[in-house]
View 1 (cartoon, one colour):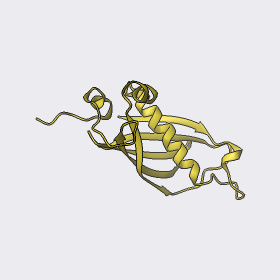
View 2: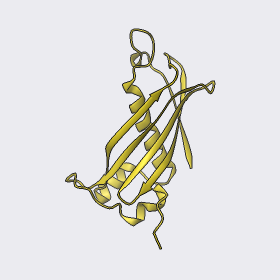
View 3: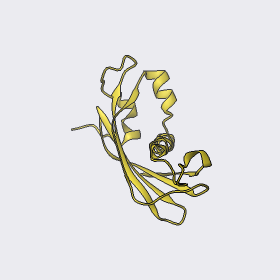
View 4: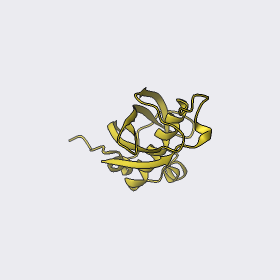
Length: 135
């Protein structure tokens, strides 16, 4: 499953050159990740509150291919690249509304409890992340 989230570049997100500052792409990835979870029938807030499950970022990568500028509409495409009961990797593609690929990246998250200890994801969440039981 691939989920799209749309946003419009705000002036405050650009640097002196009029280009979106690189750190904002990580924020856009978070937006994509939250929308992916919502589309999969999972509210991240509920997962934290009800079961104490946190998605801790272990790794983040982003490759910048073309600039985004003020007022551009950007589409963030998010999909799960890989998942198992201990971690999930989301893949992202950020495109301008004209289809130009701006950046692509991945974030890998470890499932942890409230005390930040690693834990196995409860089975009730496996379908949302595309995890299937091993036979």
